[in-house]
Amino acid sequence: MPELRKYVPAECFVEFRPKADWKGNYYGFDWMREGDFDISVAPGIGDSSFKEIIGKHYVSPGVVQPDGNKYKGDFKPDTGLFKSLETFYERTDLVFNDGTTVTNYTAFVNVYMKEKETKTIELQVRSIVRKSPESLELRCDRSDIVGISPSNLSDLGVNYGGKPHMQTIKITLKDTLDNPADIKVVSVTVDKDGLPAENIVGKLTICPNNKSNRKKKAIVLISVKTPSFSGLWFGKRGDAAGNKDFIVQTLHQALIDPQFEEYASFFTYLDLSDDPGFKSYIKEDAHQRKAVVNWSGSTGLEKYCYAKFKEYLKDMDPALENKYNGNDYLKAFYFGENLIAYDRDGSVIYLNGYSTADHEFVVMSGTAIQSTAVHEFLHALGLPHTFHAKGDYCYRGLYTENVLDYTHHLGDEFNNARISLYKWQWTKSNGNAQPEP
Ligand SMILES: [Zn+2]
Image (tube, rainbow, N blue to C red; front, side, top):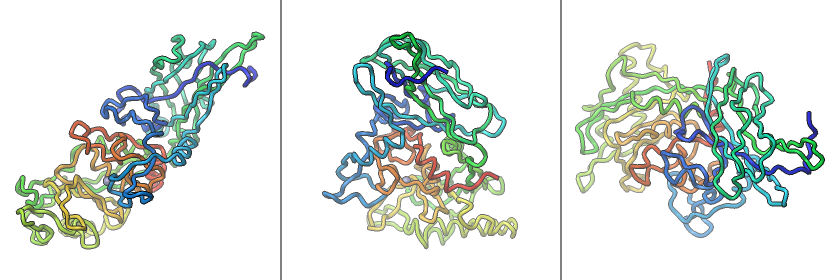
């Protein structure tokens, strides 16, 4: 082993990024956003540098927006919060020969797989070279499990001050990991005496993904045919069958496997279209606009739907009636009608969906988009909105491609922009899920 000589500075640095067309699929990936990686489904958004968008929204000077569902207010970056984030992404300062410092952060990847499976993922390395090293090597101390191809980055020449080199690499896991495995980028140079010197110039951590790190979440999907309340269709039925793939890929980022029980096999839908009890939740305002009252809470619509669902279950098999009670099962009701509701202050709000504070129920509106269901499921797994000051970190609303943001408010072209979860969100949601059986 060559001696590590810190006094021979490297003249390059490397960071890891997802594959170019990543849409939240294949793996969970998190890195310090530095404004250098455009996510195709979120043009201009996945590019927002955390330094500029970590902070809080203020409704008046010194008063942080108290409503976790609102991003309105004056946004101010928070340097303290950003510093904490720099620690989270393991900031390292690399010093070039002339004393110039470059800042480097660790990226993290989560790969959902089972023991003894083999899984290959594709990532990119982003490198800046001021002087080409003898070699630039990718090394992992768990080479018994982790294969890297190529393990030697090709020399693409000096690009300092210009565009970074982007190279695709493949990582193959031959089994799951009990502990984190680091892939370190080692720059090998020769010092003035002709002796080899090595420097670590980049790092990716593959997070542990063995059975004790993988979780499950039991979700009961219930399609409902409601009375008409959005004025567009008459009692349109909801469809729980769609977009399961997106739910799976997003929860897998946090190593959570959703276990669906779908009530379409027993009966096509829960038919409440003529149900007087459901109708009592609908009110018409002065503009003949129908909206739902008590859409959440102790007398909420979702609890009413659940009571009716239990009647169906009991009819089918008395043993099933109470099977899904409690927090172990997340009950998700899919409406076909567009959920227009009255807010607590009486104003009309348009909901794509909502989840209840007790983490037991989720309701999806006919206007739900690709990410609505999993967004609500993740609320039920304890995640606040990215723009909520209560979260571990708080980001400027509408500036991220995170599933817990409201980025779709920017316009229909951003309906598929919410694709990712941050590492702190992996930990939090995973901690609230159930052990794998
Ligand atoms: Zn939400």
